[in-house]
Image (cartoon, rainbow, N blue to C red; front, side, top):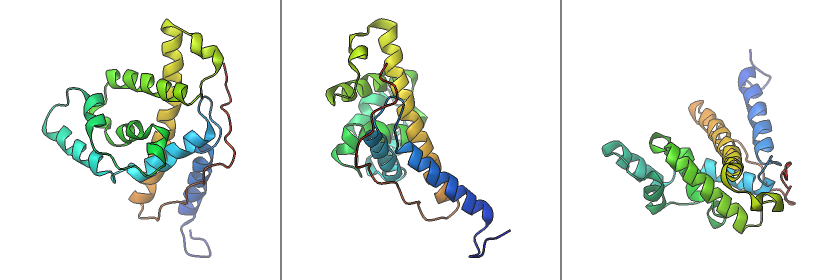
Length: 186
């Protein structure tokens, strides 16, 4: 069944669902601020199958075994679509969006440490978590990384859907004028 303008109803329903999801992804997070989440959505859309450094690394990964994904991905010459390479997370966003074939458990723990440092340097960690050590600290780092991975994966899914269906890319939400603090402060 089609709508009055000839678009199949399912496509229209998917567009509405994708628009709602993108708006949510650019909103307040559990542990990440809204502006950071929105930058990640924008960078994910920009980098998928678009960054020359990622494409080159992807081709290398098919030819040889990657020994240290973290170091090798960071050595590539990436092209960024957002300000200050996605507020310091650009290479990490590119890696997760484009290099799943070489990412390992070791990579993800390095990513959790890296994200923690970026958030700490930006003053985006609550005071209560700055004193944590050991298992508790590791869990806090991994929780934040999981939120980042969710935002990247959902953004990549929306972009891939539009590309696969031959649809124009959806309008991405603008950066929020006022940053919304995360829901949880611990």
